Length: 135
Image 1 (tube, helix red, strand yellow):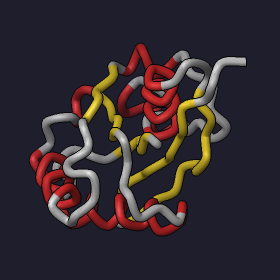
Image 2: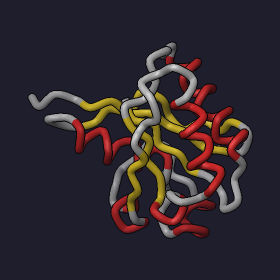
Image 3: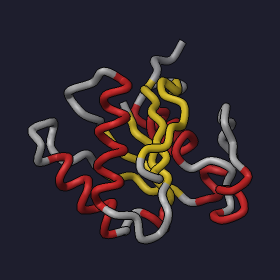
Image 4: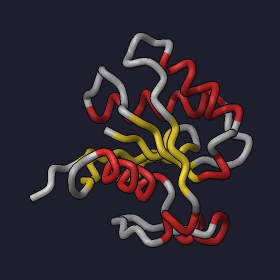
């Protein structure tokens, strides 16, 4: 399962960790995420990096790899909940849903499937997708 994250510049580690744990709770998952995906310009945000380190230290699979994608890569992905605010500020109508789907597709043999539509926790948007098998 891949978690997509959309956040503002300067996001705090506590806000990102809250979002990670909130998504995990909604999904009923205790084993963590296989990967986390976000917009390339957020991939080195200190709060995001620190939250992933803290999340990995909580006894799950370890720190999930962080995959970064450009706005152009995300803009072409059809999602159920595009937003004009993201489109205006970062150049793509979806970060969390699109990023989760792109990386899930890359990990699987077929299409990714959105299993958690975008949700906001502590100002951080998350969505989750799982890799699908080819048909």
